[in-house]
Image 1: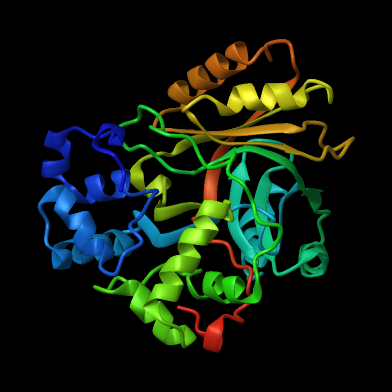
Image 2: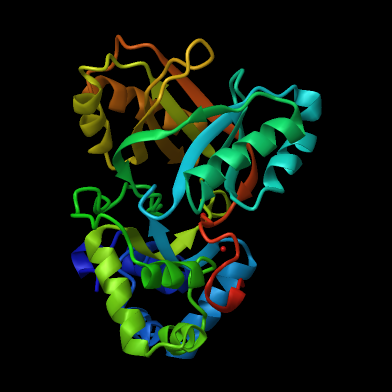
Length: 346
């Protein structure tokens, strides 16, 4: 259970809008117990039924994507960030074609010559490559593949009072070499999130033909191993007012990039920080960070602060503000091959 000193919202705000309190304080460390929603309710003097009702409402109005797991990239299946240069008059058409691929889970228009950026996940490297090839063939545009080389911080939690994450992600946790087949079945079964029901883990167990205790113990082990990097409320930041969002990318000399990445990642305002492959001449940057805010000036100021503090003031960079979100949902690694074929989403 999160400690009270880790909570970022004031008591007054929590009581004024318990939806915000639940979303803010349970973006990680979601209870692994038989009745987790009852556990959440005790933090806010809400009944189990009231918590389920609040979370259902947040899903319906778009604030909450799901209650579930964020998977460490490339620990289950394969994933990449990709980009294309698309003429403005064809942007919506091409975005729809990209979205039609089941493995695409995020797709954004950004301010840059490379203006359509999307994340692709797949069960394995061959399926990932096939997806990228289909997108290039279907759209008629070259896909710039920017695979992950090193993750310094990946969290995507959004403290709703704007003061930065109270704790960092689990990037330093130990990792198993490979999840086993039952781990994969379980992760596939919760791709769309936990059921909003009194005993969600029991419902998952029933679908898998397992005992509730096995679901709980496996989720705990996957979280401890770092394969699940965060477990909790996965919010949709744009629906919560975080609309001035920017990806900043630096071209850091190779011998400095790991040091710089660690420095950038330590800032609470940074939700993502990682090293990716350069693709000259179309893309020459290797260090990426994502900063979300409510106002453009706030984000620009945060970028300048992080840049100076990380010793990157003289390094070439690009700032790519988001223009439109075409798709945002949880990652898909199973291609619909979860237990029993059940598919019900960051």
